[in-house]
Every structure is written in structure tokens, then in C-alpha cells.
Length: 393
Ligand SMILES: *[C@@H]1O[C@H](CO)[C@@H](O)[C@H](O)[C@H]1NC(C)=O
Ligand SMILES: *[C@@H]1O[C@H](CO)[C@@H](O)[C@H](O)[C@H]1NC(C)=O
Image 1 (cartoon, rainbow, N blue to C red):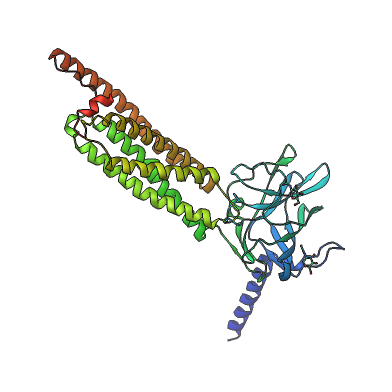
Image 2 (cartoon, rainbow, N blue to C red):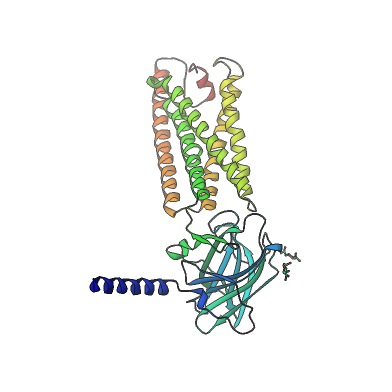
């Protein structure tokens, strides 16, 4: 029995020790003289960082101190609220670093994947900001912010990186520098970490739907139409394959498009205008293609020639804009590099197949033409719009 109690006691001491050392505890920190005490604080789970604050509910004002340890004089630190998600892009940031032996502290919006981090106003008020560097390689940003409208729980992002020519340079993109996101509730003091919230999941769903539909199936459908049609045995199978591919792409694409609109309306304070406008243009052009299919004149109708020109021009425009918009989406979503590479690989493969088939098609067409010339039948190239007239679709 005594042995059991001893063991229990040891376990208890061990647990307490682990608890005390892991709770690196912002509570035990004392600020320099003259700095008013903060009523709440939290140890952020990555990058030696601590947040101390007072919250004044009447005017939603937060007085805060963000401490970031283990940084040399040649690095910058930042703490941000991101109204649009647990991610870098869209962050409303407070930045600090040493410059010319003095601390530089200002606000900046992170609007792109490679921000220049120049001073700028945020989407909410920051009545004051300053910073201090202490002897222990610790930078502290002091600021007063007025919380954006909505919940007192906000997404927070914190970061550090090297200075580059006296300005903030690109921070490491992996490990703790990627994990340093989460939420903080200034009222309750609760924090949560991790970027895998529902918004991130919805963004990924949006990205996959659109990269597969607009970005992959649409070009594939065009390849089917252009090259399968040469093989006489594939007539009219190519036509049905083309329709199947493009209607699938369109249906999935409209779903992806709708998720995008929803994401846009849920991301208060952040707008990706060109991505959004391209998306809307694509929806309109894609829908026109569906109507064009229904309104297609008979193959021997005199307007069929113009319909063909229209259908091809719109189709190629949709494909080009889709690819551009998928890449814009990658820059906004900022997923792991490999996804962008995989998509590029798919595109390069499709392009290589198209080039091979184009060469093959020309050989077939030229041979066919020669044979037909020999037998004194009318010429029947496959590439002219006129030729398509005769193909019965
Ligand atoms: C918010 O209210 C507090 C306490 O009344 C006051 O000291 C502070 O200046 C106010 N902040 C802003 C930004 O109005
Ligand atoms: C930022 O806001 C202040 C005060 O509202 C204003 O005077 C200043 O011109 C703004 N700066 C920019 C770059 O918009």
C-alpha cells in the first residue's frame, strides 16, 4: 500500500512538472515598469509566442501585447487577425522589426501570396501601435485595436521571418511557421489552434471541384471533339463523348462555382475581385455553350458555318480563362505546392496529347486528301469548318 502511494505521489509530481514546464506561462511574465497590467494572456502553441490583453466590451477595444521570443535583430515578427479564414492571405497584421537600431512597428494588410508588407490601414481601427526589443531576443508589439464587428472570437495568425534589405522578407513555409494559426476569443480567453476548420475544408472542396471540371474536363472534352472526329470509325461516338464530357464538366463546374460565390459572401472584409469576376464570366460563357448546343442549326443549314465559329471561339475562350482562374485560385487558396504541380502536370499531359494528336491528324488528313485526289472525289479535309458541315452532326 505504501509503495502504491509513493508511486502515486511520484506520478503526481511528474504530471505537475510537465504541466508547469509546458505551460510556459505568460502569467509569470512581468512587463517593464510603466506598462499597465494585462488581465488575460495565452501561450500560443507555436513560435515562442504569447498574447496578453485587456478587453473592453463597451467599445470592443483590445489593448494587447504580443511577445515573440527567440528572434534576433535581423528578423521581423507579426501578429494578425484574419476575418477571412485561418490563413495568411487576408490577414490584418501588426508587424515589428528593428531598423537602424530602432523598433519599427506598423499595420499592414496581407492581400496576396507574396505581400510586400508595406504600411497600410487595416479593415478595423488600430488607434495605437508600438514595439520593443529586449535583451533576451524578444520582440513585443503593443497595440490597441477595435475588434471588427461580429464575434469576439477571431482567427489569429502569428509569424516571424528574416529581414531582407531592411524590409520583411519571405518567412519559412513549413513546420511551426505554417501551424501558427488558430482562433482567439478576447472575451472568454479561449484559444484553439489549427487551420483545418470548415472554411478551409470548403475552400478545398471548391478548389477540387473547379480544377477537375473547368480546369481538366473542359479541355479534355475539346480534345475529344477535335481529334476523335478524324477517325471515321469514331463517328458519331466522338460527339456523344464530347457532350458527355462537357455536360459533366458544366454540372460539376456550376456546383464549384456556387461554392465559390458562397465562400465569397462568407469572407467578410476580403475580396478576390479578378478571381470572382473571371468565375462569373466563365459561368456565363459555359451556360451560353449549353444553349448553343440546344440551338445548333442542322449540319446543312446556312448558319451552321457561323455557329461553328461561335462555338469554337467560345469554347477555347472558356478553356483559357478556366486555366487562368484555376491558377488564380491556387494563389488564393495557397495549398501545398504539390497540388499546383500536379495540376500543371495534368495540363502538360493534356497539351502533349493534343500536340501528338494534332500531328497525327494532319498526317491522316493529308493522306486522305491524296487518296481522294487520286480517285477524283471532292476534297474533304477535317479541319475546315466547311468539312464539318458534311459530317452529319
Ligand atoms: C474604449 O473605452 C475605454 C474605457 O471607457 C477608453 O479608455 C478607450 O479610450 C476607448 N477606446 C476607444 C478606441 O474608443
Ligand atoms: C489610413 O487612415 C488614416 C486615418 O483614417 C488616414 O488619414 C490615412 O490617409 C489612411 N492611409 C491610407 C494609406 O489609406
